[in-house]
Length: 240
Image 1 (cartoon, rainbow, N blue to C red):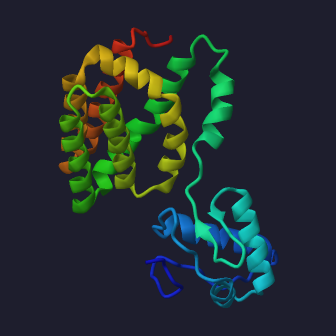
Image 2: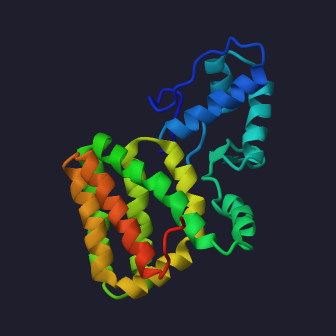
């Protein structure tokens, strides 16, 4: 069932700033990103949004057009706007071009991943709810069930890191990690072939256990160990 204006996830307030269009864009975008909308969910109608924001339908319509251009929503003839998740390839494609000529491309990516995911793990340990820990545990089950099926293991690996981002309660982690996930697919294949499924499962289990105990320091160490092992099995050495 799609959210309505009475849905507690839809938290928008009347606008008082001079730039009504910018304010409408920001208010609707914030409500979508912080409201737990899933791809395919319908947004409230133009009339509902206009009433809640205290602006005209014309401004709401313009705001929706801007959000559609940004890839956040999609519209159809005579239909309400629908939330769509941003396409990670829209970000990963220019990143791929940027790093394609770099002799340190893989290390560059892993350095960025380390700078993001180590603190992400710590925040996950601090903030994870019981339900989120349970969801993280289910991805561990999926990793074990994948066995030697490399494709299934990689997908379960992606889901684990996505669930870990969920545990932080910070939507920006998803925006940062999704484009990197596509770029790092080849490196994950290489490292998993070298290390094997058992090592990967063990590393992720250590992260899971630290999050479940709400042990921030242990979560940091477990993520660092995981990324160091990944680097080693890729046959790479840290840059000076």
